[in-house]
Amino acid sequence: MKTALPTIIRRRLFVQATRSPERVLLTRVLLLIVLVLAVLAIFWADRDGLKDHVDGHVSFGDVAYFTAVTITTVGYGDIVPVSQRARLVDTVLVTPLRLVIWLVFLGTAYELVLQRWMEARRMMRIQNTLSGHLVVCGFGHSGRSSAQEAVARGTPAAQIMVLDKDAKVLEQAAALGYIGLLGDATREQDLLDAGVPRAQAVLICLGRDDATVLTVLTVRQLAPSVRVICSVAEEENIKLVRQAGANAIVAPSIVGGYLMADSVRSSHVADYISDLMCSDGRVRLVERIALPEEVGKAIRDISPGLVVRILRGNSRIGFWEGPEAVVRTGDTLLEIEHS
Image 1 (cartoon, helix red, strand yellow):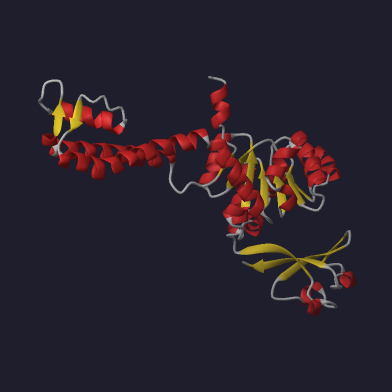
Image 2 (tube, helix red, strand yellow; image 1 turned 45 degrees about the vertical axis):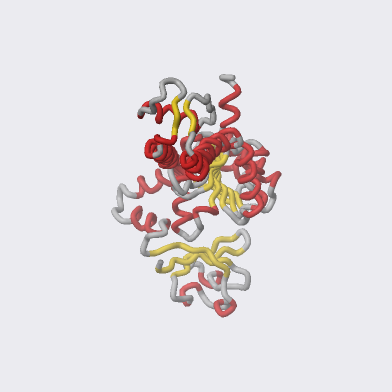
């Protein structure tokens, strides 16, 4: 039994609770106390209608005892209601209260015993309704920051699925409004449970490059067209992750090293780059398709934003490249705009 019980009550799905478990438990305990006291008060007020077959005297202890055996439906028969009024009170007032008390107990048992079944139903409902969402694999510092920034940029928190192997981390994610799923991002079934084939993008922030490569390969097998963004620790693994099928790769330690080295001779470059990247900055860098009215114009003639680069096929064209820096149909523009 000691090994079976954790399996029975093991959670996989973590969602934001409307009330904390402590508050729910406290509410139920207080409700039970109030109901028991109500039954006790009713019997005490109508104690003249009760008869004690043992000594013929009904004391407060006898009333408390009769309350207990009545609520638990034991009914030894040593104390019984004998008057018409006492029996009517027991039928009209006490019986409904007794049923409510049992419903509270049964409701608690229902949640514990049938938790896995209920969770499976919730999982099915989420999988049927969740589409175009973000899947964040790993909720460490990078995963948490990615989810937070996605919300700041307009993605609803309930549209972010966090997949992690740490239940405590998932409880924190659920408290922030995300959907938490206990599982391994390298496992195909767990990625399917997270709805990867219907996702808008998958953000892989596992902290281990070997697990990242395996996850990218698995995601690509399940959803060839989904956008995959990876966080990579070692520079030498960037090429391997790209070959596995990642659309975008970010190496936080390398980018951080660049900014730190640049800050040796500059005081404001790192701050401006941070301003560009954060949703709450004064400016932001956006990627968009060139508009029809912009075709034929030089980069410098496009307003109100500041276009800094044209992406044309595999070419990257800067604003200084003369005739090449003219917008064509189908070009992608990188533009700095006021946020």
